[in-house]
Length: 595
Image 1 (cartoon, rainbow, N blue to C red):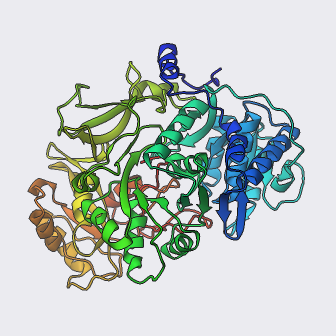
Image 2 (cartoon, one colour; image 1 turned 135 degrees about the horizontal axis):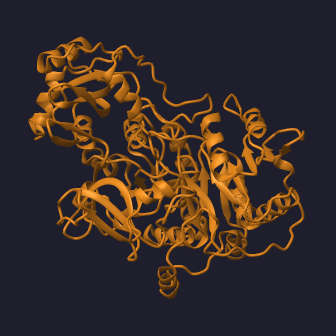
Image 3 (tube, rainbow, N blue to C red; image 1 turned 180 degrees about the vertical axis):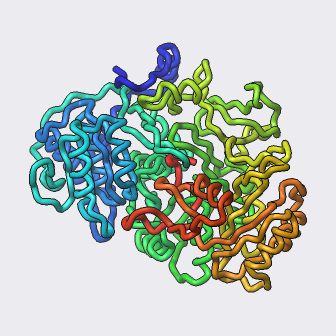
């Protein structure tokens, strides 16, 4: 049975996946009890000084599931789940699976605009919040939403006092009861899309498809009961939750360590103390970890594999991982919508440094197509299309968007620019819409950004188009200077360089760091082999790059700023007082949804 508003796989396709054993009828709600039977007193979850065994975890899930049922939660109910990296997130998610409800994963940095949208779109009847977290009162926000949205009947808040619609999360506890099994083909939960210019869409993930994803990636990652996974990024991301992440690690009897934030200090301490073997980060966090490693005496010798995904990983940064952190790099490309590609342990250094690996499943179908939809030869860049046993067939309650986002034969138009090598490895180039059309030439912003990041003195870069009377668009680069840069040059010189090169008025810098001049940047880019027509026409140094609530660089804000120098540039690292302390320079936080 498929939840109304979700698009099922065609019957013949689903039958084929089942016949091949790709989908094996797993009910996610049944997993904790199966894990407990297999792994018993082994440690499942670690958070601070709390250590929870598999048996204890299964008991907690059973009791919470019975508690939610006692509170009136019914099979099919949608429940927005907004908790930080704490054991309660994992317990509540699996308890809702067990009760037949469908959690909608939400970021703790989401505020009224996003929560109103998620509750209304999903038709949520419940909302799980962390009470007051990092100075923000989520319970008050939940009450505000309940007053606006009649369908929102219950608020489950950590540390709250029972009052009206508010139920203390700690009281969602009851003696276990027999509950019906879920249909493995039904939606288990919702992830969020990673769009940067609009409110997120809902991505339905089924029991069958997500169980397949996690066990496949866990096998490719070589996980065993001896492994310890550090959840450094928010647990509600697909990357952290199931690539192999939390679910994959628990499925193999390993231990999940929940980090409160991804800072090097906290994570290095946890890696040393818990003997972590695997973790996953985005490129910007990896860069900060690498920069911090020189000053840290933490013992990281247990770390076997560092997964990096969520944004383009430049070869220069990739090459530092092994020598400086002493572990193997695994490149990961993926999206909350489905498709995952990964490098393998047997891949050679060149492949690991320069590609995003191969699809994780032999049932994944990948096409690279041109503007007409025709497939292009290996090595040629085009749009990435995909379909497969864990890639959605439609966003939830979005028929008009689905008509544009999927081909008639069910391939998902990812919007990513990519190419395939002769041996089938994926090379991601950027985003289809993330281009500058300068004098008729289409220039991928990601390509220019990659070269800028390789230049001395540049810590972060974002390229956007700015309207131009003669060329249609020019290339405008927003840059963050490295704090340790000592080369000569000033922001004024950068502005003067832009004026001299393009006839545009100079741009006043807003970064206190000493940035390289535009002429210096152009020379460095030219030396790297970047074509002249792809060189930035203007460069502006800023203190931070703005982020969307989903953690992606907000290019809509940057494009507006590029077009209007009078707009303020005082962007903050993230929205909301409880936003996790991920660096402001962060590229998309993975798998965001999943870019």
